[in-house]
Image 1 (cartoon, rainbow over the protein chains, first blue to last red):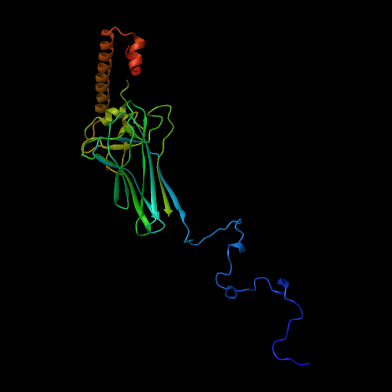
Image 2 (cartoon, one colour; image 1 turned 30 degrees about the horizontal axis):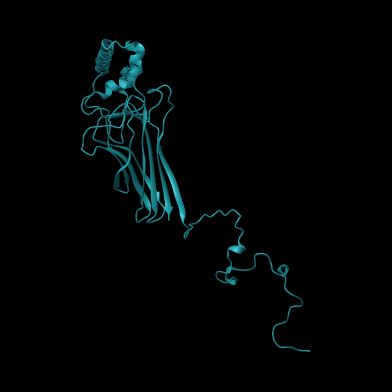
Length: 195
Length: 96
């Protein structure tokens, strides 16, 4: 008996009838693959840019472990380096820890610079009487630049009134300053968030 | 209290900064590396000679010794014992 139309299948189609790798992207409806179809416990190694997510974008660190004898001066730069901002208008946190040694000024001013904007009063020295180890520490949490790419981060000692000063006699002290010390390392950690 | 060679170097008004460990002889002193992030040279203008640095260290040490001895002398006039003086300032031990 004749019929009109396509030849019917002889039996119900099963997955075995579909060749591996034969279903194209175009054959899938938009939004057809939801999170129930993904193995959320699997490991995904993305190599391209992932957008639309919130939270941590990037973290980077710059260190210095060169012992440096400091002069009494109104201003100098401890660290200056570039951070490659990943996303425009992201949130940026800059954590600063500098290690020093020796009795010097009782107070000074430390500025953290990000992309030519300077923040005073967020980091400063901890004065400790006597020739011992002492830190400068603090952090800023700011709006990032409106563009991506390299931004200069600077850690600067600068007396507010222009008076000669120094937070300590030696930056990044080591065993030549006190035999109990190993080589100290100062560091600046930059954390970028999308919030 | 010990006056280090760094303190002698840092006491010169034209000192700017150097990177590395303190010099232990004239050759090391002459080869000090400037803190190039801020300065091109260790000293602005004419650097003091190694002999002048050593002389400055002796001068500063003498002044420091005088100051510490004066402190001990003052404490003694108050009839303090060595233990009492050290309780006030343990750094005076070598001056008792």
